[in-house]
Length: 526
Ligand code: IFG
Image 1 (cartoon, rainbow, N blue to C red):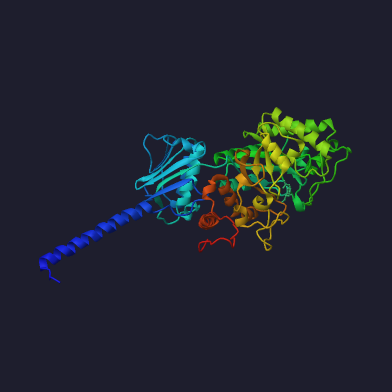
Image 2 (cartoon, protein in one colour):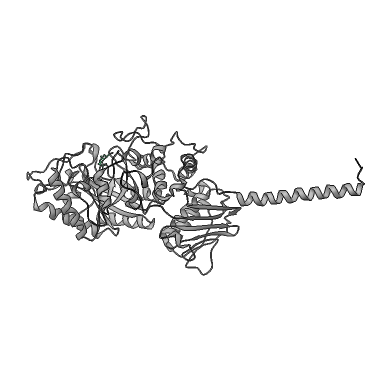
C-alpha cells in the first residue's frame, strides 16, 4: 500500500473530520427538528410540533392580554409561584413576553380552541374567543414545571419546550356534576372545585341542588324549601343552603373560569325535602319527616295537584332568572313512586315550563321514557348498559345525549374494594375504567353528532369534605375531561397514564388530596 506524505495525510484527516462534523451538525439539526413536546398535557392536544428550542421565563418578563380576565388569571398563578412582578397590559399594542391575543388564530380553533407558539423570545397564545385563551393558558401551565401551581414562591427555572400547539375540543359539552344536596357544600368549597376542573378545560358545572335529604337554594316564593328543607343532610348534620346571592356568586366564578352552570332541581322523584317543607304539596295534605338516610325512589310530587305546577313554575322561574346558561336540569331519575302514566304527564308539563322560562331542558335519560323531549333538550345517560332504546329513539328525533355511564363516569364509585369513600352498585372504577371507553361510540344508536359530550357526576352520600371531593375526582375526572376534549385518534391508555402521572406534582403543589391510583406511576414526592 503506497505510504501517504505527511502533508497528504493531514489533508485526508481534515477532510474526514469535516465530513464527520457536517454529519453531526446535520444530525443535530435533524434531531432538533424531530424532538417532540414532553408527554405531559391533559387533555391531549390536537397537534404538537416541537422545534427543539426552549424558552425560560425571565424575571423581567411582561404579560399582555386582549382579555383582562384571562390575563389576570395567568398573572395571578405565575406571580404567586415565580415571585416575578410580571406586569400585565390589557389590550397592549405590543406583545408581552407572554402574549394572549384574540387576533391571528386559525379558524379551526373555533370558540374554545387556541394556538400556542413558544419561541426563544417568548410565548404567544392566539384564540378567537377568551375561552380559547384560557384553555391555551392551561396548556402553557402544564408545559411549565408542576411547581408553577404553588401558592408560594418556588425556585425556577421556568422553562417550556419550543414549538407550536394547535388545539380545540372534540365535544362541546365537557361537564362535572357536584351533588350539594346529600351533603351541603359552601360557595368556597365549590369555587375550589371549579379551579381544579378548569385545569382540564371542563366547561360545564352541573349542580344537583335538591334531593330527598336537602334543598340547597333559596326560593323567595317558597321560603321553607331552604330554611326547613335545607336544615339537614345525610347522616343528620346541619345541612345548609345557598342564598340567591351565593348561587349568583358561584355562577360568576364559574364563568370567570369559562364554565357554564347547569342547575338541577330533581323531580318528580327525589323530592322529600320539598314535600317535608310544604304539607300542601303532598297528595295526602300531610308533610313527611325530613330524611337523612340514603334510600332512593320513595318520594314523588303529587302529579294530580294543580299546585304542583305552580310550584314547579315558580321554582324554575326564579332559578332560570339567576342562570345565564342555556340549560335547566329537571332530574327525572328514579321516580319509582310515580306511576308511569303520571310520570309522562309530569315530565311533559315540566318540559313545557322550562321552555316557557326560555331555557332548554336537560334531564337524566329516564325522561326519554316520557317521549322525545322538546327541541334543544339534552338527555344525560347514566346507565350501565351500552344500549338504551328510548334514548336512541330520542336521539334519532334530535335529543342530544350527554354520556355519564355510571360504570365508567360516576366519580362516587369506589376505585377498589379498599376505597373508604363511595359506593359499588355500578362497579369499581379506577383510572383505566374511567378512560377506557369512547363517548362518541358507546351507546347503540347514539353516535357522532347525537353525542353532546361527557360529564362526571359526583354524588355525595358518602362525600363530606373538600378532601373527599378531591380524592374521588382526582385522578379520574381528568380522564373524562380528555375523553370530552381530545381527538379519538389520540386515545391511548399507556400514553394517557404517563401524562396523568405528570399531573401529580402540580396537584401536590396545589394541595389537592388526590388518590394515588396504583395504575399510574406517580413522580417521586408527588
Ligand atoms: N343514582 C341516583 C343518584 C345517586 C347515585 C349514587 C342517578 C341519576 C345513584 N340517580 O344517578 O341520586 O344516589 O351513585
